Length: 221
Image 1 (cartoon, helix red, strand yellow):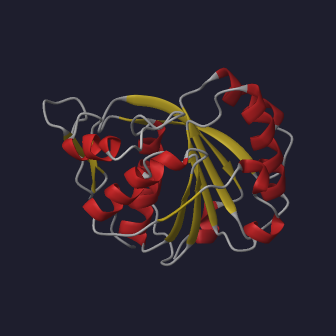
Image 2 (cartoon, rainbow, N blue to C red; image 1 turned 120 degrees about the vertical axis):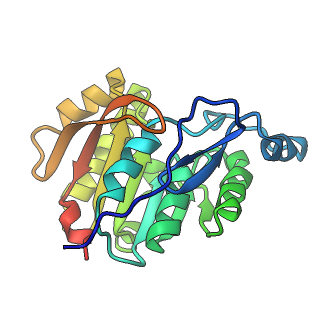
C-alpha cells in the first residue's frame, strides 16, 4: 500500500499575507506580489479576486489519491490557478490553467513560480472544449464555476460529452449554489456521474460537493 502523502496546510484566517494549502504556498489579496501585478495593469475583471474555497475540496480529494505522473490536466475557471499549481507541483502533471479573464494569467504564473513549478495559462471557453481537445486531456477540474444558469447549461453539455468517453475524468467542486444543484439534478440520469458531499477543516472549515464524471480510479498508479 502506498503511504498517503502529508502536505503542509495552515489556517487561512491569520495575520499573515499568505498561507499553505496541501503543500502549496498561496498569497492573499493583500500580498505585495498581488499589488505589483495590479500596478502592472492586471486587475481581474471577473471573479479572480482571490483563490476560491472549493479549490481546497479538490486538493483534499486528490491529495489522498495516488495519481499517475504526467497526466494532462485542464482546469476550467482556474482564477489564480492554485489547483493547477497543486497538480503540477505534486503530480508532475502537464496543466493548462484556463480562465475567461486573461488578466488572471500573471497571478497564475506568480503562484507557479512561488511554488517552483509550471503551468500553461490559456483562455479556453467551456463551449470550446470539443472531442479533439478531450482526446488530449486525462483530467478536467473546476471549482466554484457553476454560478448561473447559463454556465449550468454549458457545464451540462460538457458533462454529457465527458460521460460518453472512457478516457477522461472530470471533477467539479462547489459549495452548493443553486445552479450547481440544478446541474447535479440534470446529470442524475447519466451513467458514471456521481455527486457526493465532502468536508474539510483546513485551511478552513468547509462543506461542499464533488460532481465526478467517470471513475478517478482510471487515473491512479
